[in-house]
Image 1 (cartoon, rainbow, N blue to C red):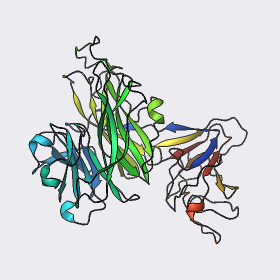
Image 2 (cartoon, rainbow, N blue to C red):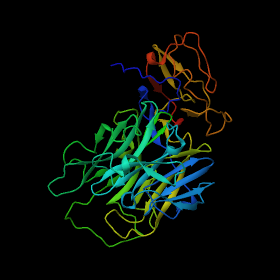
Image 3 (cartoon, rainbow, N blue to C red):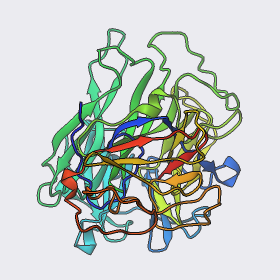
Image 4 (tube, rainbow, N blue to C red):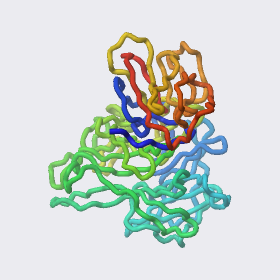
Length: 448
């Protein structure tokens, strides 16, 4: 069965999932390994739900409190507390996420906040010119029905030309009364014109039945980070959940790493309104692993609402806890930092056995494969620079021009790293899907 063509234009394509891949053989995906900074210890005394954004040459951090606070750092490791936030109802912003709106034309509304309205739980929106002094939309009243007491978040989706809100949906409880958490994605084309005009486009929980998986895992919080056109779901997943009324050791132990009643941080990917790829959740491979015995992040990890990309690296801030969800005394906690090279989110690793000492990338173009030029063992799905050809972590050039942006009528040999034009190129909407193959057992293609 032939897959439907996917329109990608000239955008660099991140092969982090099978969105543009029709077939693949001899390769498997592997999750990149982040590097925890500061020796695995917190870089900031505070906790989330919150956000860190790199803007105007510095890292801007909003951390949880009553009221929330704002801090800044030049190097991303050493933060100075600048101010407590002003102008928000202190009874209704105990959890929040922050955003610099790329769609905004009014400087007074450059910063956006989406925060929890308590009793009943709902979401409220606000705006600011400086990230410190805030005003609320809709007169500070809720703009949704039931929402989260964890993360409520808005982002601008430039491709769909809508704002998206991510928040919580409750599902039916089983007979024992266990809370069943889910999540939903809503869209609104203009939050200033009508901040309440939200339409639900996606709503889900783990598992299909009323009780399927609800004791194994639940979505505790989810935010959306858009990078190179890919929606990365940053998921706090509540795992190995105690049954109501079952025996439970409530004695705090801030040294032992637990495996029940915990929260792990996973990533998933999607495009538009499609359901996300939950591969890493079911593979039980967290994006930022919890720490070992005695660490501040050994039992629960909650990421910031966004990932920052700066100096060719991804900066992943997260809140770590040294105790389980059900323990009030969660002991030492703080905000940690993990980083990852820009082209190291996910890799495609050859799994077959073959004699060739290269990694072929085959693109189907009108029935003819287009193969990338041999360039050593490491191939990147994206990037705009080239390092030494013999370097073990070599990044090669962008493959979005034209191989993933157009369909070629004949079969030239593409040279990675060089933008190429072709007189017989046809529009991207007619481009057949990508096909990948490899017969090199040790090669790796790194995908940002």
